[in-house]
Length: 137
Image (cartoon, rainbow, N blue to C red; front, side):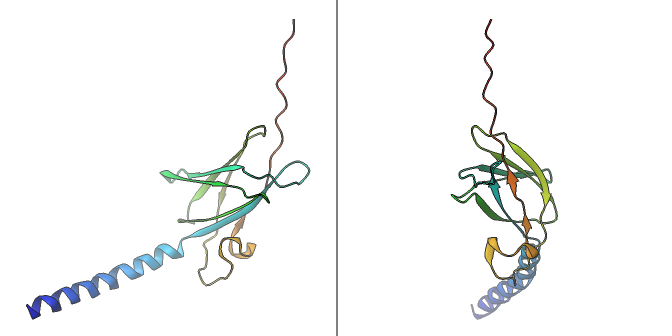
């Protein structure tokens, strides 16, 4: 019985030693993106739906919504790929952009909204859609 406890402890320790570096490598590839969505008058636009996808992983899809001040921010798990951003809100023209984020350094302070030196900033301007034209004959 004593021998089995030692074996389980040894297996658990070896398992942790193997997985810990893998988790560290994955964390080192994370990126952050932050930005602000504004209208043509540089006024912030709240409640803009942002959909983030990537061709590198067809099952990846992240959705965000801008805050009252038009800002957004998030972490992305893999900063080695280019992401596609879609910004949409009723009565505004949809905007789509591709952008790669820099690898985030977990030793930097500031969370998602840290300085632009350690993250990617994506400011977007949305234009109001023109009203539909009625054809009168």
